[in-house]
Length: 349
Image 1 (cartoon, one colour):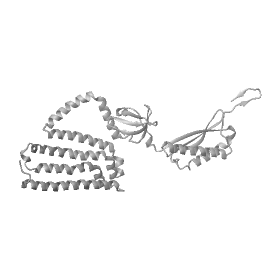
Image 2 (tube, helix red, strand yellow):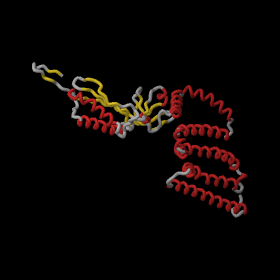
Image 3 (tube, one colour):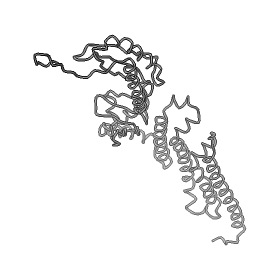
Image 4 (cartoon, one colour):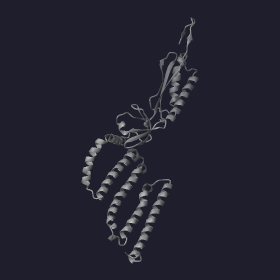
């Protein structure tokens, strides 16, 4: 046993204290930078990197301190612990880079935002993140197995045989997995979109696109979970990506007002185009379409730029009130179902 007051121990303690102070300074320095970055009004790239990687960065100084202490501990080279240090170092060299990349993949949306809107529009954060995570898991497991002395070629051969067996046993899971991959690559919808399927009773907002399931929140706030493989065989309407919404409205005027119809419809068509929410580039009209049983049926068609439901209904309301105002100003009246009693007592519609 080496005495505590041995010069070797005194030198070691001096280096240990210096290493501890350096580790503590690095720890609190990284913590302070991450705290300042969260309070900052704008996120620069280095600040974003510290914020994303602060967890592995905070543990790194203490891991290095422990390794330094273990390497230079007097007399440790004669113990069995010294034989495991190379293996521990290998594990750290495998785990830490994987941890760094994993943290980046969890915040891929912020990373793409920091690179500019052009990159965010071209690339899907969920596709990149999950692809990176899949690569990290596979490469890390293979590297760990090789670090523990397993042959990589044997593992790959066993993985090929095991993959065939798993593929036969879990074909439904694999169908959902590849269905989710196609959704992330083709991007028929993204999280937050409002979709509807005329083939199935599916309608609501997308909350999450997973590898196996897609979570949809219906309008009555109930969540439904749809297997991704289902989307490969059905038609999906993405209402969120509409450029505008069409409005077609029928209204009926009295037969007594037939001479007023051309002016009424002309005024309606002109005034409707002045409504800010109406897209004048799309086809539009106000026309007389047919003679009804007790009315002259007219129709107005326009396209409204507001695609959200509340905004669309508000714009539609203003157009309907505009139609009523024009009809009233021209001295006409809307038609209602009528009956006429003839002199012989019979009743006609």
